[in-house]
Image 1 (tube, chains in turn brown, red):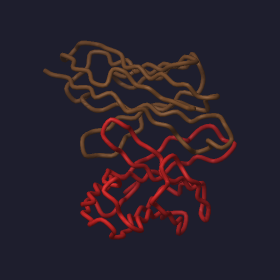
Image 2: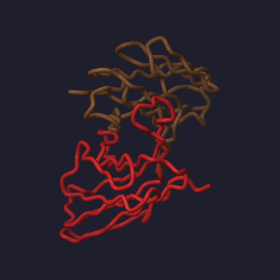
Image 3: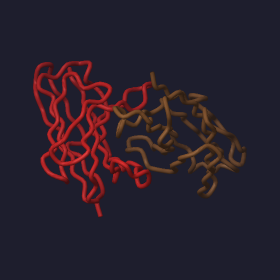
Length: 113
Length: 117
């Protein structure tokens, strides 16, 4: 069964204290892995898509990487405005999984000044 | 450019009542989705529509029906609401097209907070 697990569940950081979030997945083939940011009371907002192992993408203080079993979202020198819940999702390769993205439970990040 | 618009934003229903959640997108996307989000469980797919006139069950379809009215609109109906359907519901759309890998990220609406008492 396809599964997406994010860790840790919650992360409290001091401003400037870099850290990494983990998304591990077990799927029968991977079409793509996605990272989203969700602020309280709002819908998820797209950050990155990764398609193959070894791929990396960056946006401001965020960098996403992908291996065959997991993805990391690195937050470098975070600021309070980086506080949010970060969601990971996978698009499995099987025929009957087309369009059926599977989400992890998310990591809630709080960055304090 | 409004993106994905959901109505209503909040709703309280009594057990057994019915209602329809509305969703519209203005990005000319082919694919549309309905998810529910519960604490500690992440987003779970209720239904997916690859194009106008087609729908497919997701992980948690029981108790729900959907209608892809046209390319823009995708509605979710609760025929007889139950307390277990208390949740936050999100509609999303993407330019996902079968056989093409890119442009498959989803754009989400602001959500509908539904409470069934």
